[in-house]
Length: 142
Image (tube, rainbow, N blue to C red; front, side, top):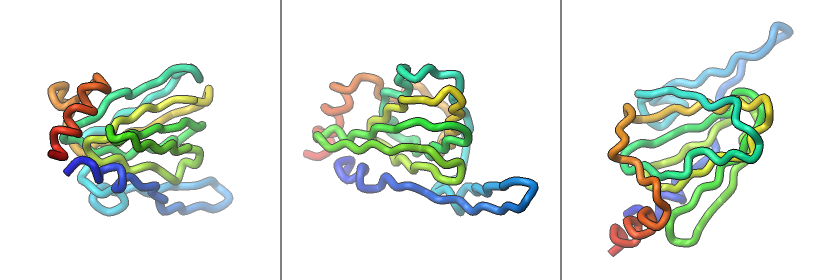
């Protein structure tokens, strides 16, 4: 069940409106985002060498958008597959389904990483140990 979740990860491009006054990016839950948005938070002020995330979620889906600056996102499926995405345009984001390990890193000094989540915060659904994540993925595949 969970072994195919890495295949569901995808880059999203959002509608932009703009003229000489600047740009407006439109992001709507259930339309541009493949879920209803229940939580929004953002990460800023992280040094280049800092790694954020380092967890998987059992129930929550995410979309990450660097609305300013840049960052990278490494995702792993617990079966040896991984991918790295560079978030460097404020009108693009990455969709992360449940049960993928995520690490955000290489933040530019001006980085503001906006995170849209499908669920309200619940610490019990987080898997914060990679070995435990791998074990859970392998057990689900059996």
